[in-house]
Image 1 (tube, rainbow, N blue to C red):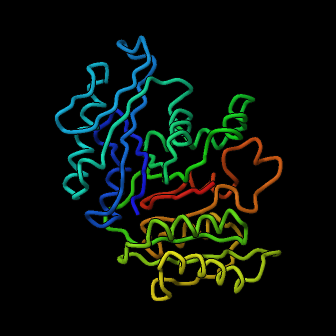
Image 2 (image 1 turned 60 degrees about the vertical axis):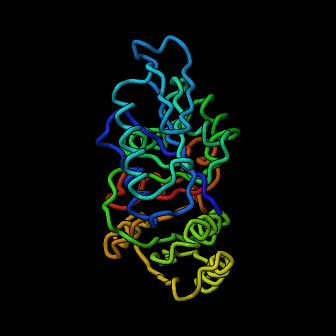
Length: 293
């Protein structure tokens, strides 16, 4: 089944970390339909009106209103994807004028386009970090509640090429099991990767066996057999610290977490992500972080 990805593209051709992650992590020829999405800065000299252009093939050029840096980034991204044998008819680009801020515009596009995941590079990752670390105002609360974060976010600040496998963080919450389903969906035909199910135990944690069994059942539904599944149950003073340590020890290509998990209540209404996820966003290095709502 074809997976639909929204990939954020900045003005800097050196910051195509999201595209590079896709090319490094997935096998050549994987069935991904990719939209390269650029938000044009509202302060740009030629951005006096809303810009909405769709790129559908190599014979069609984007309009001149796009900044030169964005055009270079899009051209380079397409070249990287073609080198990875992703068919050109599975890659389109879309550019809009900034309306609410880069990250908010990306999140709104993701909710409207029904994407399976949103891939963020360094620039958008830094903006997202600022967003999740601060209480939201009334407008942002409404956007989070009604529009945003309907699709998982893949945060790729500067991933290390060649890393493999996914560390899936579980806490017994329904959000955590949605993470497992998301990982299973994307890895069903990616036999080069295995999945490690990680449960960091706390004082009131549910039983490990029940959590692992349910998670494995979900993975089996995506044709991921036991030979590709590992379990890890650990204790630690800091859940984010344990996760970050495991990422480094295992050399994982990505780590998957719930946006909130058991971190619910008043904070969920005011912040885009829970405490553990927020800390991982600010500290993650070398691996991609998959955050599922």
